[in-house]
Image (cartoon, rainbow, N blue to C red; front, side, top):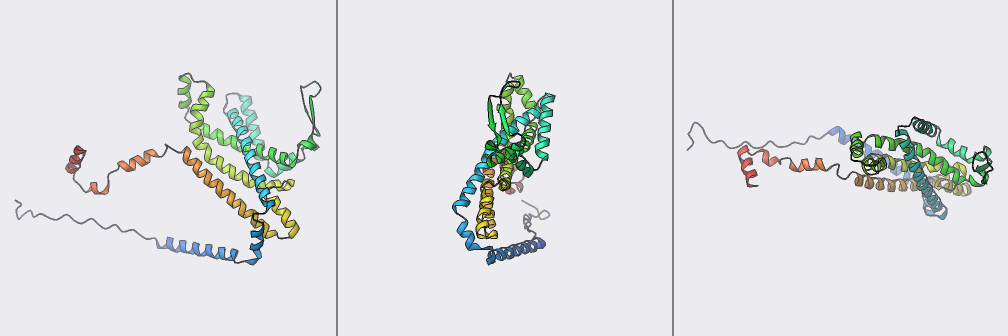
Length: 315
């Protein structure tokens, strides 16, 4: 029975949690929203944009054909640039100094020369090599081709974009492979795995998590870089819009049509990028989630150690 000197006191109530409100942040957010609304109203309320013309040509045949050519060029150049970039990356990582030197010079050239210059150079390649000959050196050529017939605007764009992209993909792949710990490959070699199997089974699966995000960004960059092929009179999305407004003189509406389609295509690629990254990041965020689940709940912190020990014993 408790004595009068030690009265039983009731537990003190838990302090209320007060969430501070940042008034400056709220004001700044309101200002940004107001400015965004003003800009949108000034754009959609301006009749000089020619919204009727935009709606008439947004799904026209010539624009859709330009979109198909843009996507085809992006797809082919990314595949060729990635495959060639992987070869250049392996050359830079090899132990052979000549291969390292060749790969270094290759990336130095195609990263240093602007893409527009490469497009114009390959388009006028026939001025340097009128005929392309294939055969054994010192003997008569087996095949002789006319460069003017082979180097079409599409082929010039394909060569320039692919070689330019391969230099960047080489650095991306090289950095992804170099990020994998050397102990992984050393352990695989100790188990008797062949070098090709080590790259295929050990290194690349771990490096892909680091290679995929910048590669997806390069795909988006490639999609936008195809607009430069309009200088070669190749009927991509931008050049198709230029053909139309050269006839009806509706420059702004047709440029808006090209802008809308570029934004749509980039948004789709961004969504695909997020899904692909989620697939390759599986298994890397599980530890944090498990720790959050195991962490004690706020209700358990108010219990004394003996009560917690009794609950753990029952469990």
